[in-house]
Image 1 (cartoon, rainbow, N blue to C red):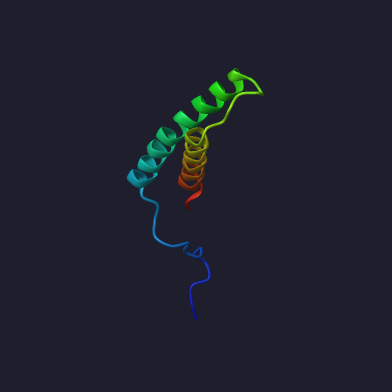
Image 2: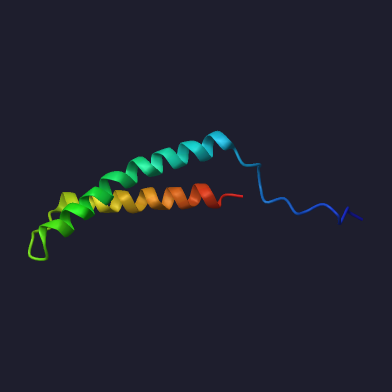
Length: 74
């Protein structure tokens, strides 16, 4: 029979360098998106939203997802 005292393994151990890299890249992707949202809100409700703004906001969402993934890895 097996040793029931050991906790189940959840895959390979966490790599600190990879986590730090994911956090840095996530933050770099998040900053332009946040600035774009601030500028869009400052321009008012009647302002045109161009496709570049939408792409940058999607990149910010990807950065946020990357940050969440880096922090939730076990």
